Image (cartoon, rainbow, N blue to C red; front, side, top):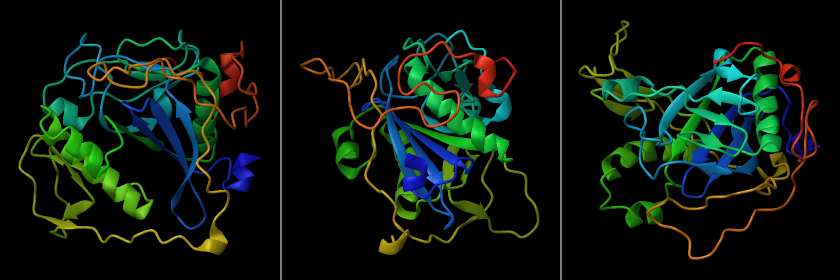
Amino acid sequence: MLLGKKGMKTDSPIFVRIFKEESELEIWKIRDDGRYYHFKTYPICTWSGDLGPKIVQGDKQAPEGFYQIRKSQMNPNSSFHLAFNIGYPNAYDKAHGRTGSALMVHGKCKSAGCYAMTDALIEEIYALAREQYANGQESFPVHAYPFRMTEANMARYKGHQWFAFWQSLKEGYDAFETTRQVPTVTVCEKRYHVNVKPAQSTPVKIEPDARCPKFERLPVEPFTPVAAEQHAEVQVKAAGQKMRSFAAAHPPTTQPSATVSAGGGILSGLTNGSSSQANPASFGFSNQN
């Protein structure tokens, strides 16, 4: 029903954004105009570590950066109910010598370097991913941020050891906020480069730890909403447990309360927002990660 109200197709591509400090995971879906629209925000039940990227195996840090999720990274037989592998380490992480594996978004509300949801919410998220694969999509992007990268939040962390890294992430955040289209991300000179392409017409191989070719910026087409084309643009938040609302370095003075409103299952195999004992095979993939 919510997909219909928002003018979205069940099997259209999805885009995921994760925000550590806010403990929130957003799902965006593309509509016929080629732009992404907010579908729902899900509370992350818990995540481990602190603000900042994952560096080494065993540091129990949840990753930050730009990732792609292919069908082979989906695991319906996870010991954490359902899971998908974020894809850490990506090309950027490898260029910096970072180590670790099996970093997931999963259920069970337990984390040692992952983003953990309640079982009911990971079912809904997983099903949305399953349906877009069924329509032939090869992958979906996940952008994992330390916090919502507004100018005010960046100013709060100006002296942080990871500030320079976060500035490169902010390029991707700002590009999506401006265009409502997922930006291209290239890695060279051990840095993320957003919405660029090689200036030369002949093919060029780009290596994450090598010098960048001369780039030119891709044209930016800002998103201008057309009133008649908007459908239920209210920011819907799923009901669910949130055990952690802020990074360890900035603990809350009071216990966070769960965000409530408009929860519930939306696709076959879901459980109307309650924790379930669903058969993982019903979620469509048989591989294990």
